[in-house]
Amino acid sequence: MADSEAIVPFLDLSLQFQPLKAEIVMALASIFESTSFVMGPAVEEFEQAFASYCGAKHCVSLNSGTAALHLALLAMNVGPGDEVITPANSFIATAEAISFCGATPRLVDVDETATIDVSRIEAAINEKTKVILPVHLYGQPADMDGVNALAKAHGLAVLDDACQAHGAMYKGKRIGTLGNATCFSFYPGKNLGAAGDGGAVVTNDDAIAEKVRLLRNHGSVKKYHHEMIGHNFRLDSIQAAILKIKLAHLDEWNEQRRQIAARYDEHIGGLSGITGPVTAHGRQPVFHLYVIEAMQREVVEKVLREENISYGIHYPVPIHRQPAYAFLAQSVGSFPRTEMLAERIVSLPIYPGLTIEQQDRVLRALEKAASLVAAI
Ligand SMILES: *Cc1c(COP(=O)(O)O)cnc(C)c1O
Image 1 (cartoon, rainbow, N blue to C red):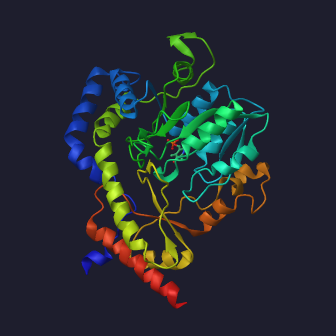
Image 2: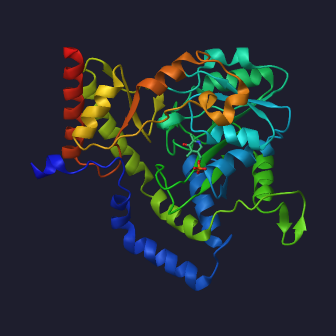
């Protein structure tokens, strides 16, 4: 009785912290003692660990995922007048990074996996196109073979946004080496999260890594000597130390997310009016989010609220419907699948430490919503 009244949180990051508390506190103390707060050894250690986790040659850490996207695009020489192809269904940062370079996002719709619909890319390519920027949204790997084949045929670069996909696999390969460069966010709620903002560009391309390294630190190789006009986009040593400790647990945490997703899938399969996420063959997602589609979303939302289950909507307004991107002048119906998702999607609680009991409460609420919908 008491349990059914307790809130099922959408995310509870304190669960990750407790078992790592002693290790994190020690690491932080050693940074305070060394006073190496900026670009200290902890940063390099994390970069090496994350590059090796991804099976990539370089990891250049940054102070956010948005900064990672921005600098990776600059390193690919994206500038004013250029276009970058990216899905309409994403967090706005993907498009913002393109705009920060002076370029224009060229949006395309998504497929049933909620990632870029490769069959729609070719029609969006023109003489201004520089880069294709797929997003592994919700932790679902996008069709990288499809994207890479088109990029090759048209002489374009590929930057993939893995801000929600740390550790995801595509045809047996870890996300991080499939495009020319891959961007990650370490925002606290991401599958690998810092105690604040953080991000990284991962790549096998020496030139991209070198240019991102320069751009993140005022364009300087040597202090007070500046090769180009850069930024201050460095990752703090404190964040790097925390990320290195957490990285050792990422696979185990992702496996827990997949187990919860499998339980959700099994039950949701039988409910009318609700469908679970679609994973394409050969791709192993990491379920940053578990997003269902509900024909009658208002009923599902109402029941979840009544049952004290927190949920999210990722995202309620597609990029082309945002006031910030009104200038793209995309009419309603331009991206039908994206627009339908914005009306139907609900993100359910999914994270390491979410108990079987809590998962059952989520599933019972969905059953209740499905039976209410069936009775309408
Ligand atoms: C979180 C996120 C970003 C931006 O990352 P920040 O670290 O918050 O700047 C970019 N793209 C996607 C898909 C994201 O989920």
